[in-house]
Length: 179
Image (cartoon, rainbow, N blue to C red; front, side):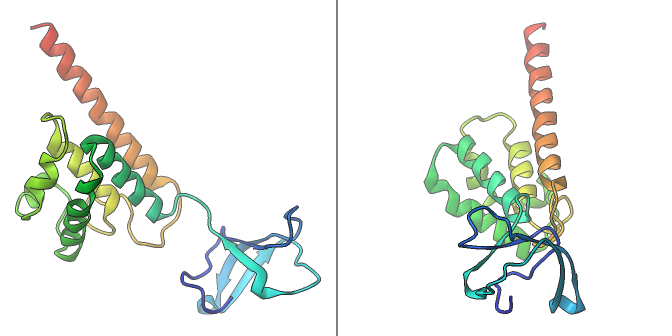
């Protein structure tokens, strides 16, 4: 499996493209010796045509949470042309190693335009912070620590933050009604 763009990691599946029943899928259990040796479970096919092997990676990798953040922004801005400035803001925050909070983000040139693209004028700062936490890696406040961390923790934190903000908005609406 040399020459892969991403190294094998525990949880990956190696399947043969002609094995439609997936009888010979190999699940990577551990990677040893700096990625040169992989311990796996499963039954390898008798005919070993390695060129037809496919590495299947499980969902909930860091790029999945990145995509969720971008999708959330698209839904809030309702404009696909706003994605380029968002990506540039993510890149700038990542390069400058800024913590993902409102005070640190306000110092970035792209922030006001990306913020303003969200259709609703309320809670823009909080929404942008949630989105940027999903789309950055390893910064203070980021949901994912690195590009190769796996698991559902980042997605769960993202959804929990959206839920918390939703409850704040509900409380704000109800308190305004009762004034």
